Amino acid sequence: MNKFHLKSERLDLKPINISDLEDIHKLHSLPETDEFNALGIPENIEQTRTIIENWISENQKDKNQSFTFTIEFQKQFVGLIALNLGKEKYKNANVWYKLHLDFWNKGFATEALKTIINFGFDDLKLHRIEAGCAVENIGSIRVLEKVGMNLEGRKRQNLPLKNGWSDNFEYAIVSSNL
Image (cartoon, rainbow, N blue to C red):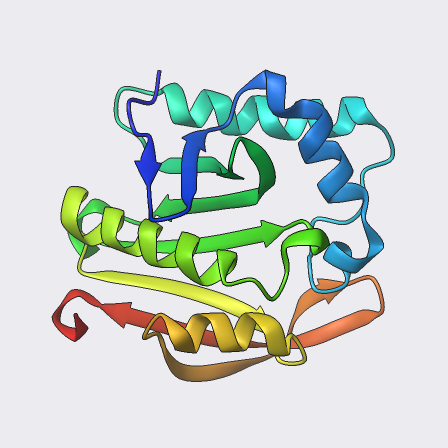
């Protein structure tokens, strides 16, 4: 079982559990949260179950390569955030997050991302944490910049979104930036 339970001023980041299935399925089924997400809206709850069972399995490995958390505010489901490790030699990881639209523009994404970045640098001793986001996803661009991530480049048409291929901004922060 993943022993990591992270806390910030307002949020709890807990390893996902099968009991989170309905909340996660609702989150993945929202057209608003799907707009800039390559996962796509699941056809049914069983498709969501398969996805989160894989995340749970990764969380439970002795040597984690992936940490997927639910984000909670006052015991209420807010969304998901994950840190996926790269090759050990490079001490890097990629982060992603997805919040229910009821919790947009309240600082929750920024707070959760700061928490996971601190976890990566302080607990996992990473050197570099990266994130990508669709070039039209202004909300995520603001979040990434608020936590101190730097825009490093633009990948052309590599993000398969429901409305076609999108360019992707590449952001990163290194431990020496803190």
